[in-house]
Image (tube, rainbow, N blue to C red; front, side, top):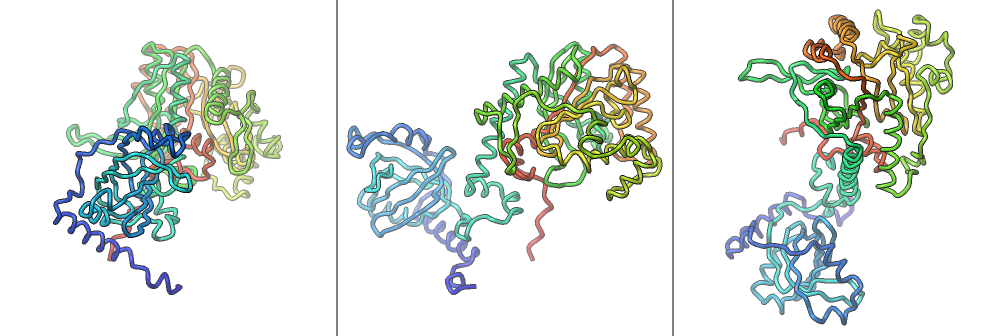
Length: 503
């Protein structure tokens, strides 16, 4: 550690010093957290309205602006001080002079710190270097910051701290703010696209007595008044399909799902999905709609259907590659039919590749493991992989020509699954058999197997129109469109272990 760092005050010393300043301000009847100031202009508006004006033009008529923001930089030269304030739109420099504020008010201002939120009123001028600056006629403390911003400690670099203290990450890391502004725009464009296509946005329960719509381990909770076990939803699918029974033909939901599974760069137990259901179409129409929707999204975001993700150029221009599940095992995975169609051979190969095989595990599950290892990481450009085994598709319609496969596809981009869709199973007897099969797997110890849902079967018995349904992972889509390697970069508050208690 160098001498300069040894002489720097510790964070606790800085906090103590700021508390002393706060006490002095209070003793001088200066409120630390008033709510009487009203800003009239965003900083971006002030900059845009005056960006083309010269120093001379700013002098006349000398318009007064009222702005507010957090002090992000402070340079004091005795009787004058330059600060930078930042609001949700931009930053601007502010010039504070003792001769304008007066001796008493300037001494109060001198107790302000980087991180404090202030309100400023004044006209504009340009410095000798041409920087647009507010000449503060009045400056008001709006919120006293008791802790230093992390620039004092060479930036907020620890990844876990960035996720845990996202509020600071957003303040000092422009890239973090850009990601979440982009996320909002992505969700807005998805909504706009589906609304324009005639879909209706709906809401379905997040707490369910029977979790369904996916093969996943649910979180459990308990409702005290009804004394009943409830589950956080793993998917909204079965409720959305009930709406098809009820007569709605185009519905969608942008929803939070919860799955009690591991955490990785691609998985968070709480995540966002877009699910939509469309009556009187099959999975082929959904492929076309997905191409249109995501290529349109790229054009909205980048004015191009070519985007960069982790140094790969991804071309979202339709049409995208379409391969059957078994074709992909052969042409991309390099397997022969005898490698994956024979249960014994498939099991041995899965083990050789480092994955476990459960006793009595179905062939489709072993084939899915082979796909995950040998095919999925290689699907960098958009690929629709379709006709998945029926064994691993409990809610999908069987193919009319081959009942061992389903009319289902998954979309892969950048080596990961982005969407899952299929022609919906609307035969109540077939669905009941699939549920019973899943129940047997659950009884055998599979925590992710689907529950039996008698009410959903009853809904199907009233008649559900033929339909296609799809789920798109919004978080992974945002990762793709913001060039983010980890899902934690695109979730404002990802799940983390609690902080260790202070000793």
